[in-house]
Structures are given as C-alpha cells and as structure tokens.
Image 1: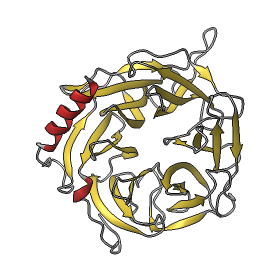
Image 2: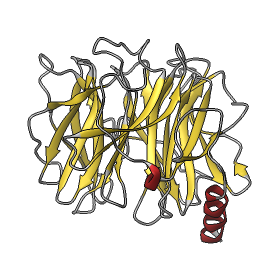
Image 3: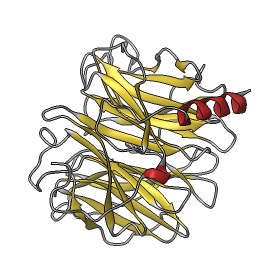
Length: 357
C-alpha cells in the first residue's frame, strides 16, 4: 500500500507547474508548508527522510528556541497532504523540571524502522543526546532513551551507515569553542565511540557537519565562523579525517545539508552570503543550491528563497527513490517549508562575483 501511495504522490508532483510565488527556477515543481497553521508559535531545525516513498519531517517547536516547552514534532506527507503535526518528544525530567528539545535528526534504519535523534538541555553547550524509535512509520514511538554520557548523536544532519553496519554520526560541541566530532554507534546500537576534534578552533571554528558518501570516501561539510563552509574527507569509514579546509565560496554562519544525487553530483543546500562578514542575523535571507562533481569545486545551482530581512534557515535534504529531491527548512521561524526539485533541471554554472544579491 505504501508503494502505491508513493507512486501516486510522485505522479501528482510531476504534473504540477513550477510555483510562481518565488522566483526560483524551473527545477522547483512543488512549494508548500508542512502545516499552514503550526501548533506552536515558533519552529526550527527540520529533518526530512524518505519513508517508503513518503516524505517524513521532524522539527523542534514551542514558545521560542530554548524555552522549556519546546518539543519535537513530526508529520508525514500523504497523497492528500501532510498529516497533522504530532508532538513525539519533550524535555520533561522527573519532578517538575523541564528543558528544551533541540535539533531532531530522522534516520531510517536498515529494517525500515524510523529513529529520531534529538537533544535536550538548557542550551547547545550543555545539552545531551536522546533517541526514540518507531516501527509503524512514526505513528507511535518507543520511550525516550538517553545516549551515553558525553555523546549527542548526529547534531544536525543525517548519519551514514558504515560498512560494518553501524552508524557514523556527524556531531559537534560548543562548550570550549566550536569543535567537530564524529561519533560511531555500533550495529547493535549499544556501543558508542568518537573521533576528534577534527578542527583547531584557533584557525577554524566549525560545527554541524553534513556527511556525503563518495565511493570509498566520506565527505564532511559544514558551518564555520569564517564565512565559508569547511570540508574534510575520510577514507576509512570515519576513523580518521584529512586536515579541515575552507571551501571557496561564501556561506553564512548557519546550518547546511548535502547529498549525493543518483547521477553522481553533489547537491548542497545552504544560505549564500553576500560577503564574508555576514553574521547569522543578516545572512539567512537567501536559501540556495550549489552543485559539485568532486566536493572541492562548487558551482551555483538555483535560488529557492530570497526576502531581505527574513529568515530561511537550517535546510534538510534527501532524494527519494523516484529521483526527486525534497528540501525542508525553517520559514521565518513560524513554519516549515517543503520544496520538491527535479534535479535533472538543476544545472551548475560558475559563481560570478556575488550571486543572488
């Protein structure tokens, strides 16, 4: 039944014209909100996965980021639209204590079950990792499980399955400067280890890596304080990494995500910066796509969103089995936007000065 729904959904998407409300590109075949009316005043940091051909999304939402009432919310895209958002996790502690939830990361396990990793705590310097599982597509969830002391799991982007059957979780900490780590969860889900930090904070302050498998190597790219993305590569399933370097094009200080398309190209969704001094508060008004053949050299792809002074941030991206690319991101802190791209229509071109100004 799920496969039939997915096929009908994909056919419906392909029949839609490109939306006129945003001057993006012909690659965009659908633009919508996960919910027109959200259940909380604010929301942020979505994570999207392909659940048997059906997009599923999680995010955190509450009164405001960091408030104790912030929980993890979930919705899935059926043929007739998104399901009503459901709160699937909170930060309630024994007694009357509660902390905010942060940065959910969805993952579809090898057996088809769904996992959500998330963080709980007063702030990103003191939070800890949590996880829950679902065997019915997110309709019901297991009790919350705290990760081992000192581990946060995938901090913002999807983990990768390693050759040994475990998970490589892209992680980072902010307690003593911005540091990137790689956490390994074994195939049984019980043993954890970590590698890092991968950067010297004196030269590059970096967090929130995104992982992309490129044949026998794994590329990590992510956010820095230096006005550009970082990149580092592993040739041994994440056990060791090349020296961290900065990419060549400008990027705002905000979360990014990347995937390897079925055709072999790398696709990155991020906030393009107008200059290297852009801070997060003024550099999140443009969501853009870049392309690369090798993870080193990048080309401008297409514009997804632009509005001076607005915030569009923390994109999550996946390619479904039908070849379409799904992007979700925070829309003005009040909604989660879902965009569907036909990657065959996304053509790279050399960056020319300041793109999308």
